[in-house]
Length: 287
Image (tube, rainbow, N blue to C red; front, side, top):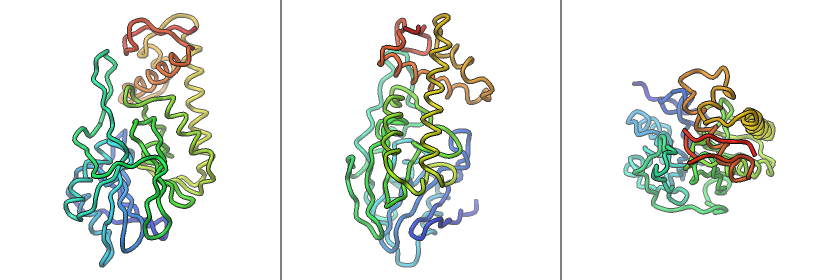
């Protein structure tokens, strides 16, 4: 397999895209190299030797990787962190360890989680990481996963899987939380970003507009779910078929996870109730 070349959309930012395209990853996972001379790698990507070779080939003469940051513990973002650390000697940084919940109530979840991922250093919300160029600012953005973080870099933001241009984010309980996801979108919307660099797809030139679109999209889904529940109780699967009309069959399982996330959030806000659960087979009722 040919080694992917690096793209430089900003003077101190390089993107190397992993060869893992899929329905959930779009054209592949974006790994970013920030700075010059002493560089930071964000989201090294899947454990693929060709992608490791591409990241190393993207380094300039004499450049040194001084830190590796993982936005969240999904294997398409985190699995290459340890192999890259062994090659470069750089420490791996990420948010506090993700608490993967046991499926005690039949709720499912845990899709794509890198259960072996352990960073060398835990980051906290508000941490500032000095580097060549602007410092990186850690912004805890739970929702897609509880450990998800974004990185503010001057007027740019590396958004991982929290904000993408080509797709909405999967929010799959119990590790994913719709209420937290919405709060994290609102938090990002309070800052005047110039551009977003997501974990998949192309950069986003109008961050404020994209955030407003995502918030409106989720509020619309919520309204559709409540409207569908008023005539009679329904399960998440029944609601998914009503709300996600036109969605390709291979994406319906992911859509059902989003519906379940909405239902759990609505239940917490006392807008719906449910039978035994909440599970994928529970009947939910509008209050």
